[in-house]
Image (cartoon, rainbow, N blue to C red; front, side, top):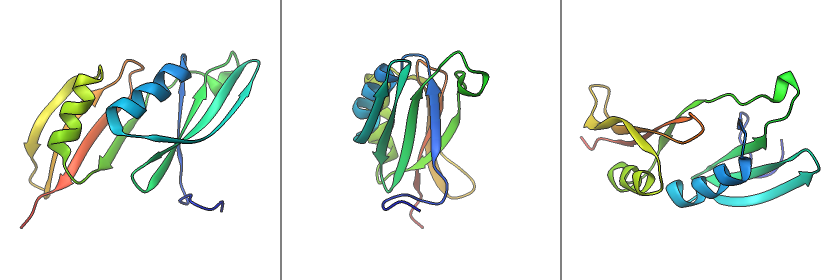
Length: 124
């Protein structure tokens, strides 16, 4: 396994990957840690919390078509990051609320159809 990686890495495939990368930086404070470009597109690794999320440009290959995902992410202050995501252009799909399983979360959707559930554990 490469340094700084977990055993599973999510890869978001999007038309307009450069715009998605910029959205992740604004909405979730993601840090671009590497980028590879070629004539048909690009791939970037984005550090988000203690995880890495890949972003790839979609191509005309069936295995690289745009495919929205649902991501559940833990952050220290879900209320603040939820509002930051909305200010960055995401739309609300689930209001912030305390959940019966011990998390507080809210959901947003980005312009590429990815759903982001932003959560913090409830203090007991």
